[in-house]
Length: 415
Ligand SMILES: *[C@@H]1O[C@H](CO)[C@@H](O)[C@H](O)[C@H]1NC(C)=O
Ligand SMILES: *[C@@H]1O[C@H](CO)[C@@H](O)[C@H](O)[C@H]1NC(C)=O
Ligand SMILES: *[C@@H]1O[C@H](CO)[C@@H](O)[C@H](O)[C@H]1NC(C)=O
Ligand SMILES: *[C@@H]1O[C@H](CO)[C@@H](O)[C@H](O)[C@H]1NC(C)=O
Ligand SMILES: *[C@@H]1O[C@H](CO)[C@@H](O)[C@H](O)[C@H]1NC(C)=O
Image 1 (cartoon, helix red, strand yellow):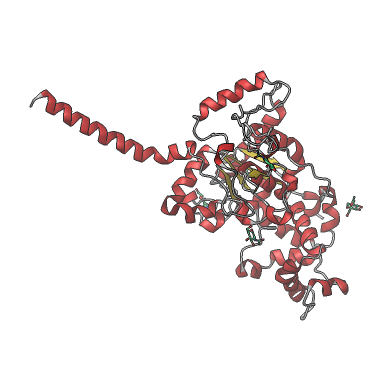
Image 2: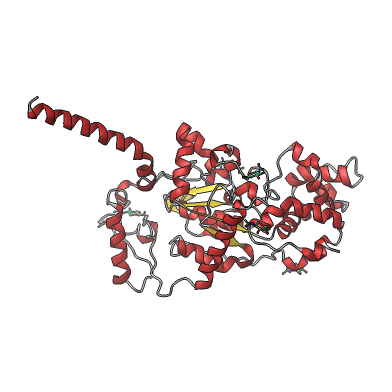
């Protein structure tokens, strides 16, 4: 056999091997370097400005532009946030700065490290989750299954932002509107005249909860077909995953106040009427929420708790997301969250998180001026609920208490 023949065989084998490698690692490479743009629907988007106005971010290798941004930090100390070298634009002077699309850089230099107690706090919360998931004394349905066994429709609370590599599991009644707003800003899924909306509070309320604004895991299947699960797992491995939780009983009070003490036609028809019929001796409750409010009829907090404890409820359909347990919404034993925020420490946690995600120069967490449901009202609210029902309710939400480090509310369980 001549050397040239050997050489040719060698080349062929080598090429085959390279192709194999590319096939195997394609998803990993794809996930980390290609921005799979998050916007899902056209929504209220208006066509992009002409291409020459857009800096060519995708063409420059990202490490080069990162170095650019890093150097700019030091060159322009006044602005706090580095700007790109704007492409020379000799055209219309009146279409100036603010109309132009300038992507922000995800860099902010901090002179002080994150406070040790905040880092320690996260460390503890993550450790607790791991311990509880491994502890056989805590049992709940779905705890032992693998990620692959979670049905797609149960992954609808995981919002993905490919632009920054973030996954957020939203829990209704735990500052979720504000975090959804932040996810919309980060993923730039709301654009006007090609300029992404940057102010979380300027996003209209009905859009915040419109699922077309968010790219959630359950939509992967539609877009990626049989690769969906594989891609999800790659993203779960690479991205920063976070969620916010709060005391489970206080969350229930908050849900009740928000959905049944305020006029809400949808919740009145779907849930309040059922409660009134079943537990309040109202075989024919008023047909609309306005009528019901006019005659002063609404289910009491105790009726609401009765509804949650009634085995019939789960048989009809899974708990509504506003009172569904966090362990069922976010699968904390299958997904290793990098950051666990508590509503009770929301402002500190939000600042820490945005900094950890390195987006603290892009968005700020909107401070809330609303009258939040306070833990101190717990005893008052539960005073109308029989002690036996309180204990059953604790059983129902015990995994949430234990997974996220909320003390068992002994004062209201032992009376
Ligand atoms: C959500 O937004 C889309 C597009 O903006 C719109 O067509 C749809 O009606 C909205 N859905 C709801 C429930 O508001
Ligand atoms: C610049 O833009 C303004 C308004 O957008 C327009 O009235 C004007 O004709 C434009 N000038 C040039 C030179 O394109
Ligand atoms: C499991 O949890 C129980 C109750 O919190 C605790 O007493 C026990 O030590 C834990 N077991 C392990 C192995 O951590
Ligand atoms: C999960 O597995 C543990 C042992 O690994 C077992 O004791 C427990 O009963 C299982 N729980 C469920 C809900 O299947
Ligand atoms: C907040 O709620 C409490 C209890 O419902 C009420 O007494 C208080 O007046 C409220 N404060 C504001 C500013 O709404």
